[in-house]
Image (cartoon, rainbow, N blue to C red; front, side, top):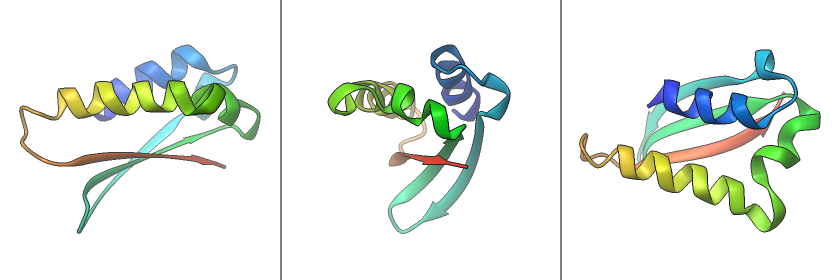
Length: 77
C-alpha cells in the first residue's frame, strides 16, 4: 500500500525525491501520511481536492483485501 501511494504521488510532482510515506495505526485505522515538497502540495491535492480524493479512492479499494480502514493524509515538509 505504501509503495502504491509513492508511485502515484511521484508521477504527479516536480520533486519526486521529496515524496515520503509514513504509516501509523490509530483508532481510525491505518493512517498513511504522504509528505511532499511544499511546492507540490497543490499538485497532489488538485483542484477542489479531486486528485487527493482519487488517490484515497484507489488506496481504499486496494485495502479491501486487508479488511482495514485506510486513511491518506497529505502534509508538506
